Image (tube, one colour):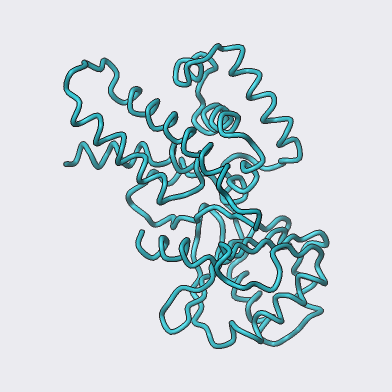
Length: 278
């Protein structure tokens, strides 16, 4: 049982980083492990390598299928708690990076992740994904071209001044729009994922003044009655909002030079329920 748990812990980051879905990642890992444990007719020399290859390839195939069925509305990854002991924390990508990786096709994404996050050589990637070294190089080059605006490392824990988010919420509670605008980057982007199930004010809001107006409106209309908790999700600071004990909103922050650059707001009840069950 300990061996199974250790394998699941090791395999989860590969699946999750490719899929951006904790629930799908767990399903893939469980399916691969079950098939491996129930298939005794072939010997495997490198069990760990075999399982990683299986998980990566199954994740790529599932991502392809999901890409075809995803709705036109805003889609954000399922965030994960950094206190979860069932995964290797340092191998989970930052939330901002997961959002950026949605620009890539499944194979480009897998090659980029294996090379940049897991330090695979092109030879190892080629063997894992059953194509040539040259193909691996081309896919990585294409991925980097598509992500040319990325200035942050793949894994980028965000260090914030003490009580930064508490001060942010205090500013919102007081309705201090000038101070709030000062805390925001001029080109801040607020993305909201309702999963097509929740009516939201705006899927995409750009600019400090617009973002401040949105945050104040949402707080006065909804959040003033909610309980607040501060967490770290995918190496980034986050605020969780609870209504009568039920998680109804998760906001993940990207901060640069003490200014909030991005806010990722998840209100999709399915994703929030997965967070609760995790």
